[in-house]
Amino acid sequence: MTSWYSLPAEIVVENNLWHLVRVAGIPLHHPPVVNLILRRGLPEDARLRLSFLHEFGHLQTLPFAIVHASILLITGRWRGRGFLEVLTALMATALAHEAVWELASETYVVARAGQDYHRIYRRNPNPGGQALFWGSMAGIVILATPKLIRR
Ligand SMILES: [Zn+2]
Image 1 (cartoon, helix red, strand yellow):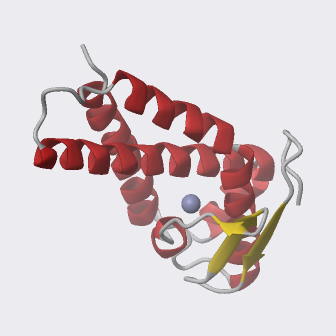
Image 2 (cartoon, rainbow, N blue to C red):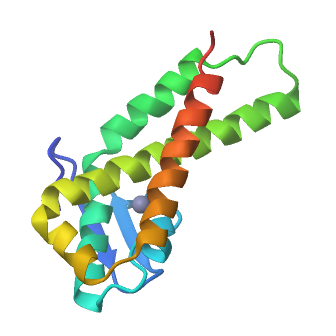
């Protein structure tokens, strides 16, 4: 696959847990949150298709995720903090970055799959999984981002 900004990548999706996105030979590791929560109960063909789009979405939205992480790192309060405070802030930054990237990637899936996305979930409802994914990811971003940016 090639992203909109001409970055080539290899994407492999095989089952609920196993997926791979590799850019220039470097694997982009991220937890299978979406596959476990959001695709629960979907037929295999729909699950694999949406999972593939999600992984491609990570590639397509990588610049947005990098900008978000950069803003957090540049504007973060780092001076005058103890080691544990800096470590905690770095972990919170990584968590907020991951949540933003998951939201951006799944938003890409919704846009790309269009009506198919809604049809798949109408036929295979997973309201708990959808509420858990969208609610928790949005919650992390909304709660963490303002706290991490220096006032
Ligand atoms: Zn993801």
